[in-house]
Image (tube, rainbow, N blue to C red):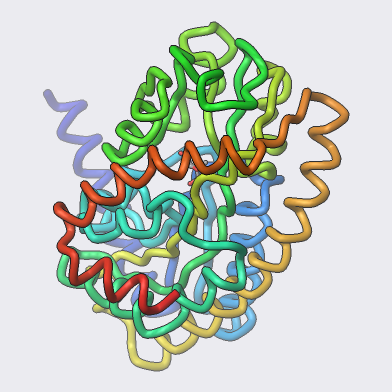
Length: 327
Ligand code: PAF
């Protein structure tokens, strides 16, 4: 008991010293993300870190944690809400636990390219979505790009919708993805990204879906043979900051964070688009890459329509109409 008391006492003392030191001299930001340091996510977190440091003359210190070291996306979101962590990058898909409206960004086959998505994300519609997060305990700063999602698997080449039949496919923890791939004939299995590589390696799942750059940076080509260019969803990322932390910042400090966030967004999107091409070229040397014919694409889109209609019921047709009008 006494050892416990000493430990707790010491922890509290260290905790209160660092809290007061932080208030006077510096602001520590613990920034968590899911991919590794060599990914485009890692590079953009580095850009943000340098910019925030430069703009604040070193007052802000960002400590970044790659590879979901601070937890998976859902755990980190909760840590932000509770004030135990300051910042993170999240997929829109896992944000639906905080605000179900975020499901709109992952609707299948919506955008033709990145710039079209940028227009909606950075326009009034995208900003209103970010503004809506604040009442849930997190502040949405900017959108980055994860990118168009494509399928990989180790079972067979997937060139048609029928080829997806019974493929055990890991999807993000979002009912829309589950429904989408089950509609297309696969056996969709929701799973946190941090468990994915092992699941692919052991055959617990046959495949997964992510952008080329993530397939490369996470080395999925080592355990996956086939890549299908389905481009089924354009997936953004959201840079979040904890509202309890945000509320402690002065207006000048908030401006610094916002400026650095915008700089990182521009750099990340440029990097993401260049990297997509490089990653595809790389993956062609490691995997069998298959494109999908326009006829098969139409079948997939018809299947997706069922999911879109279901989301219209869940989120309200009004919201979907506003979204379509913004595209
Ligand atoms: O597949 C996922 O879970 C997401 O695309 C990832 C890689 C965690 C990025 O947000």
